[in-house]
Length: 184
Image 1 (cartoon, rainbow, N blue to C red):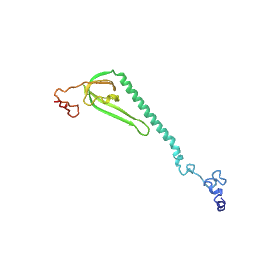
Image 2: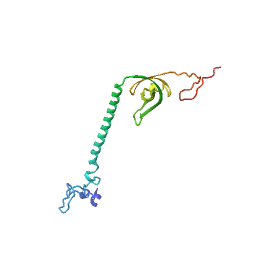
Image 3: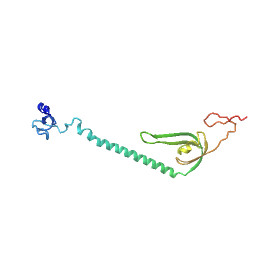
């Protein structure tokens, strides 16, 4: 400590900011120096106080975008609900033409969620994709025919019609030909 005092490193004027006055309390007021009020003494700040003045604006913009997206999604969900509720429940002859799954989540600590969908083609050629329960996803395959019960895009059930081939083949729809084992 004594060595530092001898060298003069502990002198208070060395540790005061460059813009502080002689007593360290405020800016040095030299009557010959004119300061531009638009210039900041902060080396990080730019025009208009830098990043700290733009952050509230950016946060406000992101908040408005977030609220807009949430409102649009809620309106779309409400419209789908209203459309499906207004339609009568129908049972029509249909054929399964496609199946798919949609998986989301699983990052970090979130659980994986899988949604199951099936596309049916009705007699008029119209295709209807509906979300189906997981327990029924494996119960039918592409090419199965039967009676689809639905209310708009709401799935109510599918009763598969058993098709027995009359030509002796055991070919599954869209699959390889399977022959029964020879029992003779």
